[in-house]
Image (cartoon, rainbow over all chains, first blue to last red; front, side):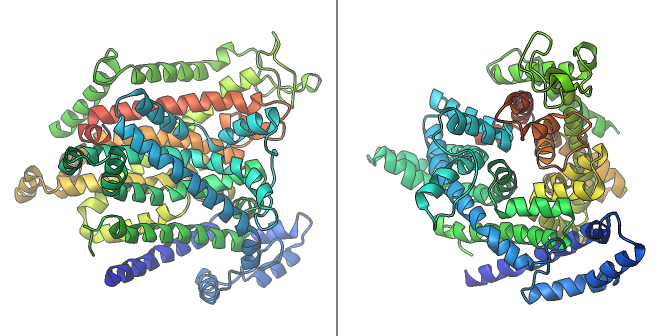
Length: 313
Length: 295
């Protein structure tokens, strides 16, 4: 088991290294000069040259790359070209809202989607199944920001139950945080619920046909125990996998949802950085999100044996 | 040559069977309705220049943000442009991006996947690169590509394509890996068939059925991502009306003019919904193994 975990952890290194090279080259090999953007339209060639020199943009590519990686390995993410503050403090200031919304989204999604999928499989080919599947297909088809605006229109503008936009940290006022975070979380959860419910249903359908389920029922085990203890546990691996790979959807969704609900998180930070060509911030953010995705999927892989003791490494 | 054509034919035969099935027991009415809705949206978008009452780009300062009226069935936007004309015309570019991204990513993924599946040496390197690409959130990668390459139609299609390619590669590779163990492939190798012949004539046709299904899903997801990109300010140039651009412009006016987001959003969602349903139906017909899994 330990050997397996170590092997999996080591396998993430080449993936992250390729991500780093890719992001670096992506930014350097496309047209557009960050020095020109920084200096503004009125800059003289001389000024441009000095800015490039200060940013190290005149060095050969490989030196720029190794300087960056060297700093990264020392925990230094660089300095923003636009605001001139350190990238790590920028991320530190804005990661809180994103983490809180993401956690709430995952809680809501798993709590709703897994029972939805289980019930749909249990009542296969009935109206309940049809309803869950319809929701699931619909969830994939409506853009996340349209869902956000529909929720705003109904609950904030018509019913006035919640504020339209904005964010309050849970440490400051938990009630206010909850009221403001519930709509972004629901918005973000829609596609995740669709994904997890669909996979739970498919996986459960397969397991419910197994002999041991018939045996359990035959010896009089209560139906909810059959469903949630016998069947769900055996159906868990594909569900966990989809929660892991679906994490990419969640990250993409965060970027959009933060724009809709005006939440000062890292999603909006990244979009602003990309549009302003703030290289150090873009590099750090893409590396960070890719890292989160890789770690989540690593944890998912390792957790398989916890849910399914037949899996041994 | 016969092998390739036969497999292509069977794939298309399966597709035609799918379309001509009269709401039968196997498929239900869903796919038929989906195909009809999609057909209406596609025809209405392509024919939009023939029937829309106004030039979708024409601004009129005097008729800004009007409500629905006989002259403007859905009202006007903040620049006095007719929303109905814009939404109907906007479908053209959105659909073009969807189809373009699907075709390009399937073509690229097919070539890379065939190479990865057939040559063990290349496999390790290609798959590491694909794993890395998949770790980067698609939307961030796409915004970065558009922001760096400019908001042209081509650059948006490429930006949507690149994050999709690894998924196609994985699919093609897995099909090739299992097909190359088949006796007919081993026989072809034993007989000394040239490598391109084995690759393109014996192995490639196996990928067509799953690729048709995958391409459908990519088309739906590309239309969705186009909307997200425009919404975030990294889509096709704002002078071209697309569903995404109309909604992006509607952001600031959402509280006074929800229709700017609602109408294009509705058409877009209906379109994606129908494409996804058709993809599911195609999968059921072309890949019965999956049908059993999903019940």
